[in-house]
Picture (cartoon, rainbow, N blue to C red):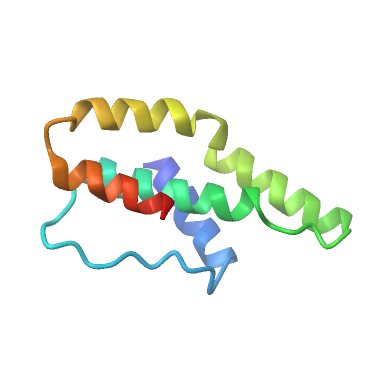
Length: 98
């Protein structure tokens, strides 16, 4: 739950960055929603421009660390394996990268 709280805090810190997700036709499991939100947040912060500012660089590094973006590949693999037979869920994860 702490991870989800961190994601929500970082989303507030990064307004208007296009994290909106199209409403699914079915409710996705919470672990899938958390993963897709985390992937988007990590992508945003990983590509954020530090504006040649030490403070901005610190903000970006802190966001990436708080999200634990280094673990995203492992987490995604685990969720994909868990739902490998559910094409809707696998597609929802794939759509994050489009």
